Length: 120
Image (cartoon, rainbow, N blue to C red):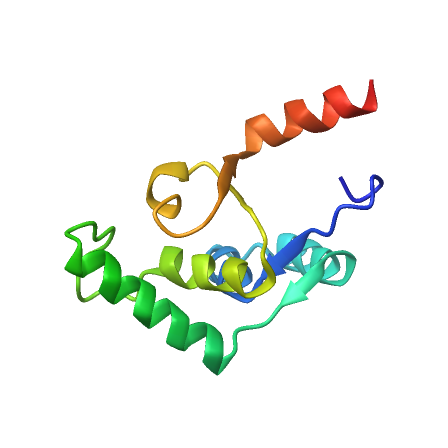
């Protein structure tokens, strides 16, 4: 995708979720790989505007009875959706159902197939 000129973002909320697991498991080599990935992709930091939008999305979903997380949880999916909305990006994930409430999503498998077909 990068070779085709597609902008691929690394949202800060995803970096956090992946990094905390790697650090807890003492996977220092994988942390270094994540650091390199952060340099290769377009890093998308969290901002106050993003967090305000995430809070709004979370509240709207809850009001519609479509909550995707326990009310006491931070709900990283909604933060990710707000980050994607911030730049008009689609989210590549295996969690299509929850995120589709907020933003355009596509499974990783479908994206890989699309990329392979476009190179043929």
